[in-house]
Length: 261
Image 1 (spheres, rainbow, N blue to C red):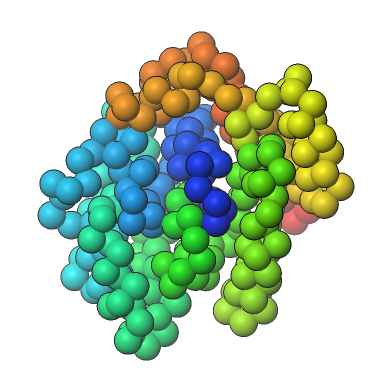
Image 2 (cartoon, rainbow, N blue to C red; image 1 turned 135 degrees about the vertical axis):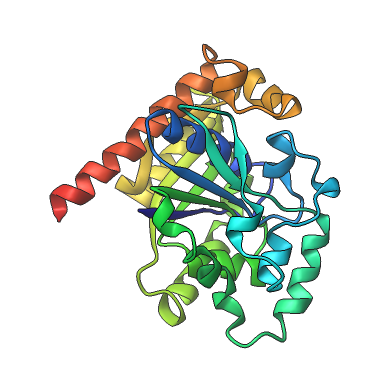
């Protein structure tokens, strides 16, 4: 099974959108999927139609030792293509203070996930948009990292800090952690700036870049307001086509891993 953190310290790059729609795509292809909302802004939770402020228990309670992951799993959809997620809410910000005095504080999420990981093929974690103790928990709990990267120059500015933080976690806490995918998002294929930035990204990351690019899409922007992933909301849209292509590329990584043994 794969535990993948979707991480970028810059907001607005399609991080939560990618967690939801990649997860939904994998579920449509028969994979058992759990998404975890580790962002205090609760974007994933709201985007799947749950009013976070009305929840009695969230990931906040798991990290505080007041609940186990199985207690707060929410099922989205029914039958083929359905998937599970762990909600968040705004009081989750208090977890930083609580975790600060916890022995082994970087390991709390990892230990919580161990209780359910055998039930899933994929666990996708939506990380906070800044490097905090919560983000450290995400990186320690994960085996892989996908980085969504908007094809604009400003989006490249913070990437070095992110890579430095990942390197520290890998060295000190999680030696097996690897960046296995860079995903270009909010992309204009015909705009000169996007093409130039894409060229720069390829120079830096080489084969780690997904061939799929996620283009700007009205349907992708609208789907969260309806509490739906893109395949539910607009299955024939450009956004659905892009995330289906990404899903197939991620599944192809499975085959490559098996072949490499």
